[in-house]
Length: 355
Image 1 (cartoon, rainbow, N blue to C red):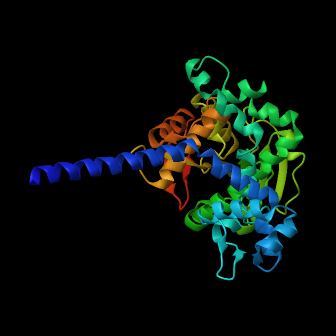
Image 2 (image 1 turned 90 degrees about the vertical axis):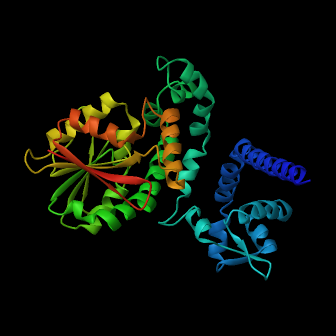
Image 3 (image 1 turned 120 degrees about the horizontal axis):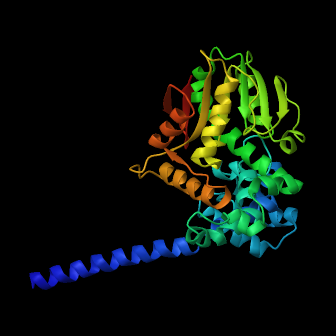
């Protein structure tokens, strides 16, 4: 009897494990649903509307303000509440949560522009070409080019609407997630830096935050002409248009955030060499804010880093996230004598390369 009971117990455990595996697979199959429903909430401006009405709204009032079906809206909210995005109060009213506030479509602390970017038709289309790209054995067009006939950078140059979405998305990610983490943990890296060139700095909004935090710094926002030509002016920041493969404006230090991962090692080394030429021979340094992959790390944060590596594969020309060893290689090949890597409270680390 004991053997029979033990066998039944083992079968029950195996059945439960199989069911858990099936549930996990279902979540992968329907993983797109979360992105789509959150995009719907951003487009409807659910969070903005609740916030504008004092932070609490009934379904009737909310559906009336949004001019949409209360029955359909209830189902959308039920789905989001289950994930901690919005909450339902005992009064049958809906309220914001810390997560929903990050996804409002307005405000300085919104990540909605980044979600709008990644969930856009332009950025989703390349994913359908991932397997074809792998079968080409690195010899064919990359997924974005397969989908749109040109790489991401030429596409943005030719399409002002997507260029705007791209710049706003990247700026929100840097402003809300990365720059605060840099200031919190590594503000000391900017001591003694009188001038700072942000290489691939987008619209300059992130550099403006650094200049505001360290007012002794004179900022140079350096990006492609079609990017800086539509950038707003910031106090202490000068916009310069150009190509980082040709030159980098002179400064005490070069700052590169989420740009080197867009390129393969050869191009990455070329950019770093141009940075090295732009900074003082004895005291200059390059400050890199990028992901550092640790293949043994199984944390949720590490999983996000691996997701970003997949995004690089889908959207860039042989771009990738790098391990410590890979960062050491490109820095050494570019002529930097030593480097340090400092983790932050977010998914990026600060890598300093010294002349």
